[in-house]
Image: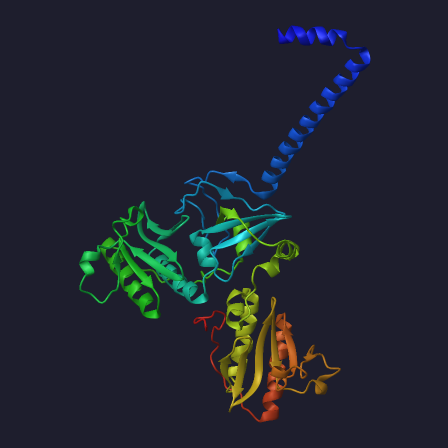
Length: 424
């Protein structure tokens, strides 16, 4: 009845009225269609900029850069099975929550996401301190003397021979653990401190867990490795000690290389001012560059550490002693400081107790830092950026020693490239 009535009425409408009605309907339909298009495009753009979400596979193999001459497959399994993984886009910035952070914020334009870190064993080793790396390297060398090979999973490094696994490394927090294929019950009343991890499926074949927290822990681990070798009837080979201490890399680099996975936590609640400031910041600045000298040295390149070690050995040959502060390492003699190391960015500096004015016009490149309070007693600052600069610094140290009447001792070269104890 209603349809018939509308039909009769509309039949009586003139062409002008019909034209207006058709235009109005067309306008409404166009507006609705435009809104739908904007919503679809907006969702697509947000998803494409923010993250790429995919299921985390349980067996995702990649290969890392070699540590020394060892190739390391980085991913076999994930301890933290997450429903979503966040992939860091090229345009994105990752901001850590702080030192040794377990979470951060991904920023792309005005989009911010709160993410957590799922670090692989490889990433944990790379970002650990030099003390842990030294203990790891020493024990890894010991396994090589028994001809064991290495296989890296997401959470562990396994040492095997034939088809059997005899040991596993793991890192929890700041502690290195070693799991051995020994029955814990056989060592119940011995000096070795250990834990039985046999109830954990992935450690059932290597149930004896040792925490490697000291030099004594390393010695005891070597003794137990020898027990494993004796039971398996292996012969120990004389293999030269190699360096398996990887160089430090920041979190952003490790995320991009696949050694740290990001997982979504929530949208970050931050003010617009902080958002703009963070989004405009450089990635290197955002990585929370450390301020204390010890950590800077730990995270420095091998070239910087090598130059530092060479110059420090030379200073010690003139009877100097070392004292570490937050910003510097000072070399002193008889309560007087004669040299200071400093690191700014990726550059090593040595401040020497020489008058810079006496060396104007010479071959030496230096800067007068006498107007800076803490360098007043050591005003000549020299950059150590090449082997030649190391030679020139040794000449300047000899000049200072000659002025003071010091004799140079022929001390054996020591390796100071690695920080064995991190000062708090």
